[in-house]
Length: 129
Image 1: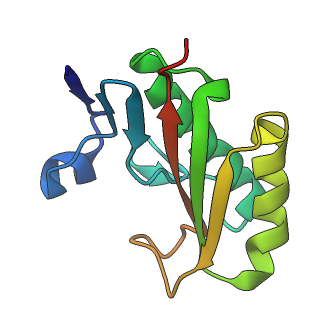
Image 2 (image 1 turned 60 degrees about the horizontal axis):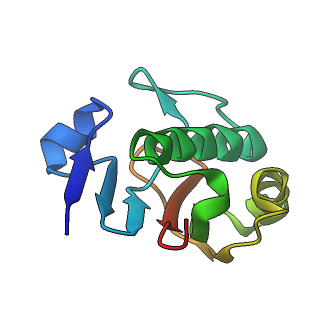
Protein backbone atom coordinates (compact mmCIF):
# COMPACT_ATOMS: atom_id res chain seq x y z
CA UNK A 1 0.00 0.00 0.00
CA UNK A 2 1.25 3.45 -0.87
CA UNK A 3 1.05 6.19 1.76
CA UNK A 4 1.25 9.84 0.67
CA UNK A 5 1.67 12.59 3.26
CA UNK A 6 1.38 16.25 2.24
CA UNK A 7 1.62 19.46 4.20
CA UNK A 8 0.27 22.90 3.43
CA UNK A 9 3.30 24.71 4.78
CA UNK A 10 1.43 25.92 7.84
CA UNK A 11 3.54 26.65 10.92
CA UNK A 12 1.63 24.27 13.19
CA UNK A 13 2.27 21.31 10.90
CA UNK A 14 6.03 21.72 11.22
CA UNK A 15 5.91 22.69 14.88
CA UNK A 16 3.64 19.82 15.96
CA UNK A 17 4.75 17.18 13.42
CA UNK A 18 1.69 16.38 11.33
CA UNK A 19 0.49 16.39 7.73
CA UNK A 20 -2.44 18.35 6.28
CA UNK A 21 -3.58 15.26 4.37
CA UNK A 22 -2.62 11.60 4.32
CA UNK A 23 -3.69 9.13 1.67
CA UNK A 24 -3.14 5.49 2.54
CA UNK A 25 -4.38 3.27 -0.27
CA UNK A 26 -8.13 3.86 -0.67
CA UNK A 27 -8.41 6.06 2.44
CA UNK A 28 -7.65 9.78 2.65
CA UNK A 29 -7.81 11.89 5.81
CA UNK A 30 -7.28 15.54 6.60
CA UNK A 31 -5.94 17.03 9.78
CA UNK A 32 -8.20 19.51 11.49
CA UNK A 33 -8.85 22.44 9.16
CA UNK A 34 -9.67 25.93 10.36
CA UNK A 35 -10.17 29.31 8.77
CA UNK A 36 -6.45 30.09 8.92
CA UNK A 37 -5.07 31.55 5.70
CA UNK A 38 -1.46 32.67 5.36
CA UNK A 39 -1.00 32.33 9.11
CA UNK A 40 -3.97 34.40 10.20
CA UNK A 41 -7.57 33.65 11.09
CA UNK A 42 -10.07 34.92 8.52
CA UNK A 43 -13.80 35.54 8.95
CA UNK A 44 -13.37 36.37 12.64
CA UNK A 45 -16.71 36.13 14.44
CA UNK A 46 -18.52 34.39 11.53
CA UNK A 47 -18.90 30.65 12.16
CA UNK A 48 -20.57 29.94 8.79
CA UNK A 49 -17.83 31.67 6.81
CA UNK A 50 -15.13 29.98 8.92
CA UNK A 51 -16.76 26.62 8.19
CA UNK A 52 -16.89 27.29 4.46
CA UNK A 53 -13.22 28.34 4.49
CA UNK A 54 -12.15 25.30 6.52
CA UNK A 55 -14.05 22.98 4.16
CA UNK A 56 -12.39 24.62 1.14
CA UNK A 57 -8.99 24.04 2.74
CA UNK A 58 -9.81 20.41 3.51
CA UNK A 59 -11.21 19.70 0.05
CA UNK A 60 -8.19 21.35 -1.60
CA UNK A 61 -5.90 19.09 0.44
CA UNK A 62 -7.90 16.02 -0.56
CA UNK A 63 -7.75 17.10 -4.22
CA UNK A 64 -3.95 17.10 -3.98
CA UNK A 65 -4.09 13.34 -3.35
CA UNK A 66 -6.70 12.65 -6.06
CA UNK A 67 -9.85 12.76 -3.95
CA UNK A 68 -13.12 14.40 -5.02
CA UNK A 69 -15.81 15.88 -2.73
CA UNK A 70 -18.12 12.96 -3.56
CA UNK A 71 -15.57 10.57 -2.05
CA UNK A 72 -15.95 12.10 1.43
CA UNK A 73 -17.60 9.58 3.74
CA UNK A 74 -17.15 11.24 7.16
CA UNK A 75 -16.86 14.75 8.50
CA UNK A 76 -16.20 15.94 12.02
CA UNK A 77 -16.98 19.48 13.10
CA UNK A 78 -15.82 21.00 16.37
CA UNK A 79 -17.49 24.24 17.47
CA UNK A 80 -16.65 26.46 20.41
CA UNK A 81 -20.28 27.30 21.22
CA UNK A 82 -23.48 25.38 20.64
CA UNK A 83 -24.99 28.64 19.33
CA UNK A 84 -22.84 28.17 16.21
CA UNK A 85 -24.19 24.68 15.47
CA UNK A 86 -26.92 25.68 13.01
CA UNK A 87 -24.70 28.06 11.02
CA UNK A 88 -21.96 25.45 10.85
CA UNK A 89 -24.43 22.74 9.87
CA UNK A 90 -25.93 24.88 7.11
CA UNK A 91 -22.46 25.69 5.72
CA UNK A 92 -21.68 21.95 5.79
CA UNK A 93 -24.93 21.27 3.92
CA UNK A 94 -24.00 23.71 1.14
CA UNK A 95 -20.91 21.61 0.42
CA UNK A 96 -22.05 18.11 1.35
CA UNK A 97 -25.86 18.14 1.10
CA UNK A 98 -25.82 15.95 -2.02
CA UNK A 99 -22.97 13.74 -0.77
CA UNK A 100 -24.39 13.14 2.73
CA UNK A 101 -21.35 11.75 4.53
CA UNK A 102 -21.76 10.64 8.12
CA UNK A 103 -21.06 13.62 10.34
CA UNK A 104 -20.29 14.49 13.93
CA UNK A 105 -20.66 17.95 15.44
CA UNK A 106 -19.15 18.42 18.90
CA UNK A 107 -19.06 21.44 21.18
CA UNK A 108 -15.57 21.91 22.62
CA UNK A 109 -14.14 24.22 25.28
CA UNK A 110 -11.90 25.97 22.77
CA UNK A 111 -9.58 25.67 19.80
CA UNK A 112 -5.90 26.53 19.40
CA UNK A 113 -6.50 30.13 18.36
CA UNK A 114 -9.24 31.89 20.36
CA UNK A 115 -10.58 33.43 17.12
CA UNK A 116 -11.34 29.98 15.69
CA UNK A 117 -15.01 29.16 16.06
CA UNK A 118 -14.93 25.86 14.15
CA UNK A 119 -12.52 23.15 13.06
CA UNK A 120 -13.35 20.37 10.59
CA UNK A 121 -11.86 17.02 9.61
CA UNK A 122 -12.65 15.12 6.42
CA UNK A 123 -12.30 11.43 5.62
CA UNK A 124 -12.69 9.96 2.15
CA UNK A 125 -12.78 6.49 0.62
CA UNK A 126 -11.88 6.09 -3.05
CA UNK A 127 -11.88 2.33 -3.48
CA UNK A 128 -14.88 2.03 -5.78
CA UNK A 129 -13.65 4.34 -8.55
